[in-house]
Length: 208
View (tube, rainbow, N blue to C red):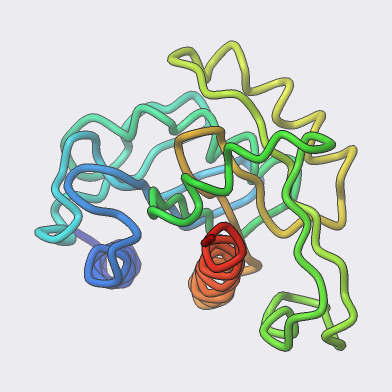
């Protein structure tokens, strides 16, 4: 592995293990990528079927926009098409996907096709947000086993909602991104905190 490839693979593996340790990507769930080049698009991404608690740099491959492996060995994540769609639509530097309990529960909220979060101080951790009075709306889309066919719709949705910092897949989990891996990791931490806060608050409200 080249120094650049190795360093980015190491960083992705560390983020993946961090998500596992926080309970956001248990077992083989979740997938993580970081952009190497934007024109043409080249990304490093986790390979399919790897336990995220055991994620190591050798479980990362570099691919082109046609999903051909350039460096490393293994099969890119089954949701690689989604990562590429997000990079194209948002010019993202990194894309992270988790399967936490709270994001999965809240993703079943079908009101107005999305989950709205507002009034929380932690919202200021999202890129470009300067006040707790910010209103963050995360679109919720249906799950599918054919993300290749769904990718154009995802790109359209992202362009239709340019203010969103992520989206939820129903009964599946969260996708978020950032200008680089550090910002994407911060967005994961902020959004997962907010999901848990909202979920726990709703749980209290449901008690007799």
